[in-house]
Image (cartoon, rainbow, N blue to C red; front, side, top):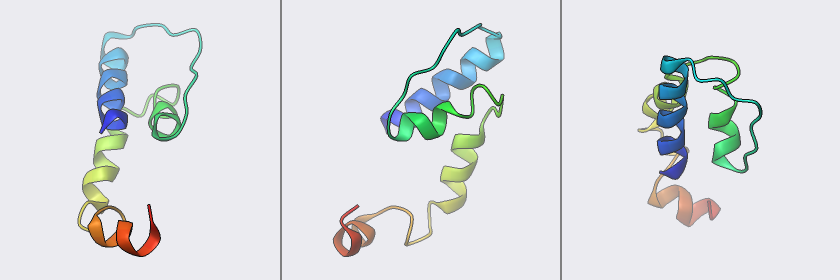
Length: 68
């Protein structure tokens, strides 16, 4: 959820055309942070919504069967 929050903040940065000198990130922040320099506003939420109902993507079953 922190990654999604970060994605939303970065979308606002894009909307406001705020300049950023560099990006340092780890984990989900890296995936969502890549949308910022490529100026792909809304990409993180689009893909999270697209795969939300895919049993392989997220959920208790995935956690129990894969540990992630």
